[in-house]
Length: 369
Image 1 (spheres, helix red, strand yellow):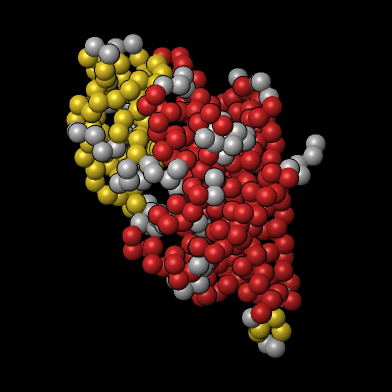
Image 2: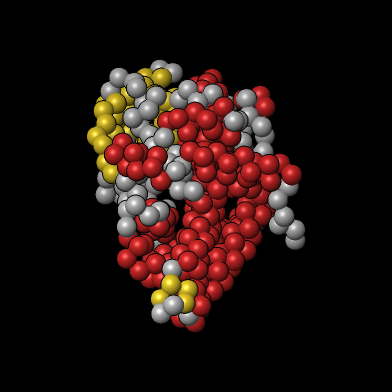
């Protein structure tokens, strides 16, 4: 199978890499540490470059590319620890709206996102609940309208203008609903995650909402979204680990001890060689997962490939983070040096949407069944 990038993907990779390299300087990132590690100017530049509508069709103002092409952007963002919520918005926020039956509210939200005028995010979790489907939020119908009442937390970019979709219980089961983040009845409290990015706890008090999907259709959307989020994390893990290893190789080639570069010592060279092997193995598993998502019609085959990639990515993130920190010595934890940002991102990606132990347990249960 040929995993080479297409001309479109190569062009996107070069464009995104250039934008991130120019905008995500260490000086700029240090400034953003005090404001939630989100760069509104960079987000606007991505919109102007047409990168926020990669997977959307032309009728919605997008370019109509697939998830594999979007993954190229995700990898570049992780490689530069870009201070923009691409996974949270372009995957968690956009894809369910793209897959659900079209409505004016979702179409308007996606058009505004592409223009950089509003966000589209997802409220997946409730306090004390790790399973998306275990929700206490209620959706009450009043004629043709719906109202949401409940609590959500760890919601990205909820302080920005835009819309958010979430899950709620109806009289007929689980439903997927879209609401305006600035609507009456929405209150928010700031939270901070591992990387220093702001997240928000939301209280919904009879908030007006639009129903996007219910019952079996909502469950199918959630299953599909979960696989894409796990695959997206694996893609970002490849980018983050590759850059951590590059930083370590550069540092040990320049830093000397006993009159020789650190990279010439076997213990250092072998550790970084192990990192390289881990990264290339993860790259292969991730490419397989992306291909299964795009081409396979076997749900079990798709799920198995994605779970394997995400579970292994957690192990690789852990090993590469520790190895690169060790060969850097004290420099690795210096906040004037970029490695600490990658280590924080690595820990977040390792645990996002399921730890390696949880995913291996799911994989084992699926194989036994």
